[in-house]
Length: 259
Ligand SMILES: NC(=O)c1ccc[n+]([C@@H]2O[C@H](COP(=O)([O-])OP(=O)(O)OC[C@H]3O[C@@H](n4cnc5c(N)ncnc54)[C@H](O)[C@@H]3O)[C@@H](O)[C@H]2O)c1
Image (tube, helix red, strand yellow):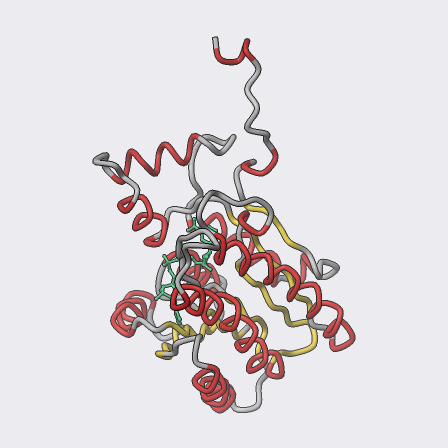
């Protein structure tokens, strides 16, 4: 049986990953700061889920959680670490307050770096790490300076870790989703709805992806699961776009296409 740690696993993409690993028969340690959502997840998915209330922005809490997971495993190694915990915050470089900048860097960047510091030593040979970055590591919307910077930093970390841990037989990869239908996306849709329903806003965002819709968390989880599997044995240091073609297109429309 494989043993997996998922940060931010109580909702959204992380939860999709938890469900995918549970379906594959894994024992999953879910780290999230939302205790209620963790309890609901465990009630729904059962004993394969081990819930730990942890704020990934707290490096001591991550180290303590690694100790708990290690004790629970009783000397067995970990198969995979999935870092999905993250927050979406807005602002240009001029408008972003210190508190917002610190939040994004502490959670989205530090939360991955220090989760890796605590859990990579528990991974087996053949084990792997998957980091959830974003298409915003490649191209930015307006007003997401800190978020985009953080997502780009994650791709550099993934490449650095892939090089450092290859000799230990540990692979490290990133997934870069486009828009995914999660509580985070729904809350952004509500914030920028301009009086429309969130469903309408999400559908409109979906139309900006060549495939014509946003992704489900399960579709991203499928790629995460693949990257941790032996089928991806020669894949490391990669960033895999799961974006419905969003970054394949240019926003240039020829006159005849507008007719
Ligand atoms: N939803 C999208 O469209 C989208 C697109 C690209 C990338 N992403 C990235 O995917 C990841 C997951 O996003 P999502 O849409 O599933 O978000 P979400 O808000 O729906 O779920 C995130 C989960 O992480 C947890 N979390 C947040 N901060 C935490 C912290 N400090 N410590 C522990 N747990 C914490 C939340 O409690 C929640 O359970 C994020 O890193 C996000 O940046 C999301």
